[in-house]
Length: 120
Image (cartoon, rainbow, N blue to C red; front, top):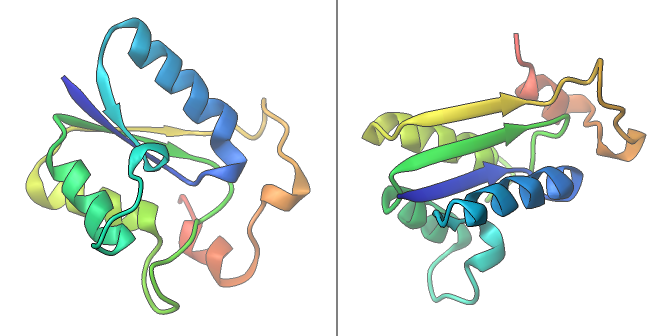
């Protein structure tokens, strides 16, 4: 089974690492941005190509909306979720419980990114 791991990076690095450790323990192949390397294609093309090649998508959601391919675009994570839904990939989405897990202030988005992340 191939898993595509989607999330913002810096704020969830420890969580990503834990998920990857579990997947390795089960000898499951996973793809995440850490493994993409250099490419002649744009980062979003590489992301979506790897996602399409996966069997399942795991998404980790924290308190950051994430970077965008360009200023007017949804974040990489949102685009990955939309693509997974569009092509019918099974999604497992895990949302950080900020009532139980402290979050450093620098990892909390404000402004338009906070509005775009709104999890209502």
